[in-house]
Image (tube, rainbow, N blue to C red; front, side):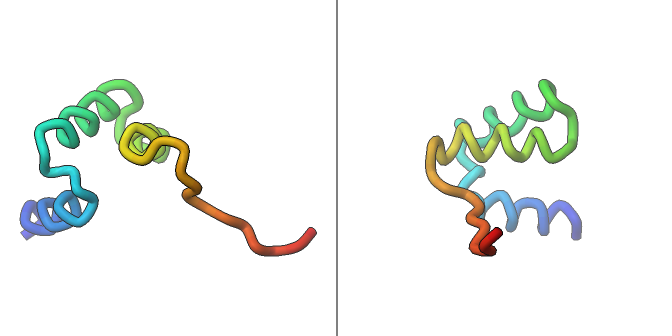
Length: 58
């Protein structure tokens, strides 16, 4: 069941292509399974697009 969930998430993230899976595997080997790996994959997929915006005023 977990494998099916993993495939569903990878499909939603558009990572079931050979290039997407390659980027994911390279990031896992570089950084391990942590937040930095997710940031590296996102940066390689989406480049300089805005990911998070803080709308609170200081």
